[in-house]
Image (tube, one colour):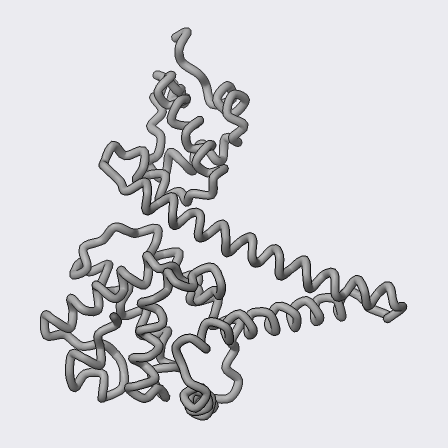
Length: 274
């Protein structure tokens, strides 16, 4: 028993809380032994795995990604590291934008403007929206002409009143996180196809008003995401986009359809997200 550690010892050695240890156990990342009385004990191998988990978490990898790396199954570390660097770049850009907004507000305070907490929150949200809009303008300028953008604006004006853009963006991030945690998946598996249904359900505000050329130009922009990923945040990663594109294509090639406007189901060309 000299080479076995109880949960309190492991918490002290790794810096993890007992709650975190139980979470990693529930996710299958570690498998502690049990004493006759039911207490968890950890061997040197589990301690080494936990130290690896802590290290990989510090680098920003998700629990799902860490699970794949420690599973013994061969993984593409180059791709995982590239994706993590891209995610860090997005975070760095977000922090830079937040710093710019806060510096702007601070200068207003220095000029003697009365700003309370409610006003501060409003200014932060306004600044974030302005910067995000400018980031997207730089990206979309590469893929849409001024005339196409005007048509976009006219069509999107048909979206029902009261549409909450902030909540909508949150739903994309939530769905993306669920998909990333589930990967890799067989594109035609029930879970993969359920994600396709969820994806097109979220697209409804756009697909309900988008013309074929708008849809296809937007799909081309996202297919080229690696050229601008980190410059604007679509709410999902290139990995998620590639998975949805593949799973959607698999359904269409098998004779299935997606929940969109009539022109999307009239031929495979309009439904291909390439």
